[in-house]
Image (cartoon, rainbow, N blue to C red; front, side, top):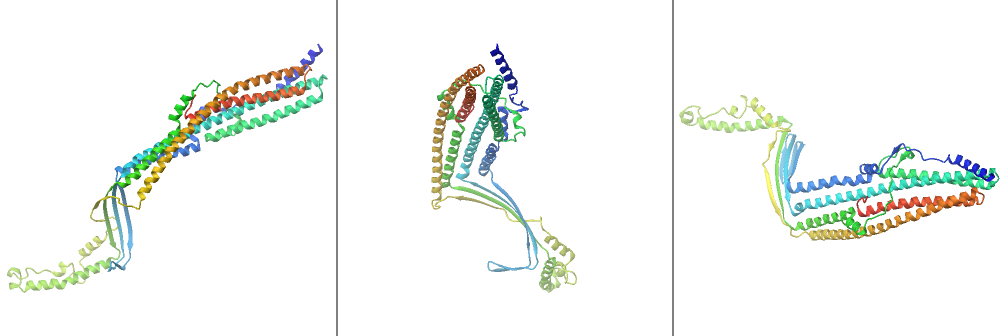
Length: 512
């Protein structure tokens, strides 16, 4: 009866302390794997950088078709100022007595058809396809990173739970040692040893929680969004069942050969290089160029007195000749044409635009001169329309075309070998990761047996210690063995899930 009372006292003390073991905080928010993948696809900086290449690739295709089918059109205009003075051009002296302002416009249409422009659309479409495959490859890689880190965070959370269980066991052990010490069945050394074990497990729990929080922070970083301030309150609700892998290696290899994005991207780059080789070979063909242009100009003199003075001098210079013509008509028989006096003579001053004094232009003449000069900036004088057609056939360019063709062929051949190397690499990865998955699955069963054996060992050690036939050292060793075995089991389970994720990366698509 005395032994039963002692055992009852020790069990009651153990339950009172074990009830104080720390519990996992209840999450205030959750992040599922589907949410993480969706956010990563929209917000991951590295993936978005790859997506940015798609826009440039689309415009490169449009540019290639535009150069082949649509002429280039350019419109320009100009404004200028020229001061008065003289200048020599082509051996001739040109004088400008008045400063002038000028403007002009030009419309130019050009179109060139050659082997390069004909092959450009195919080359750019192949390059666009390569960009699309590289984006798909980046998406598969992003999915693997997020899934891997999500599993790492779950693994860290499971290890934190193992640490919490160890804290509870050490609390039970401490309560048991203190109870036995009170009834004289254990020494103070047992109590101190149990206290040390409890303190070490508390520290291990703190570190496990820190590792769990850091894993969650890394998950948010890979997703591309800011993590909540209270990261510990974020729960990861997804769970992954352990099932025996049934994927056959030959099926996985066939899927990888057709769907692995890295292999597909390498093939697309090889195709783009093939089109580049065609483009370089087309440089031996003739090219056709068409060109047409419309132009116009204005020139307005700013010093109008010069224009008026020049017109006045010209009109006055014509007076002697006009008077001479009148004198000839007046000398005819009868004093005019047809014998009619005055017929055939003119008023020279009026005809030449001079007033009665002959020293000034008529007002309407001055107005016409000023109106003709006032053309800046939009009253253009059009130049004649120009158009030309040119056909050119390259003969010799210092072997530049030969060099370009050789370089393009070498690039195509290099990428062809790169495709083969990538296919070999993927095949090796699939085989290796398939073997790793089988090993990881078998390791779970082994670690499960080890965990169960360690738990049985702990129960036996605790029972022996309660009954006084065992030592505190046996209990301590058994508890450490349980913690290691449970931690190893957790690692085995998540290494299995990570092996599946790695196999999915090698194959190039999700397998579950």
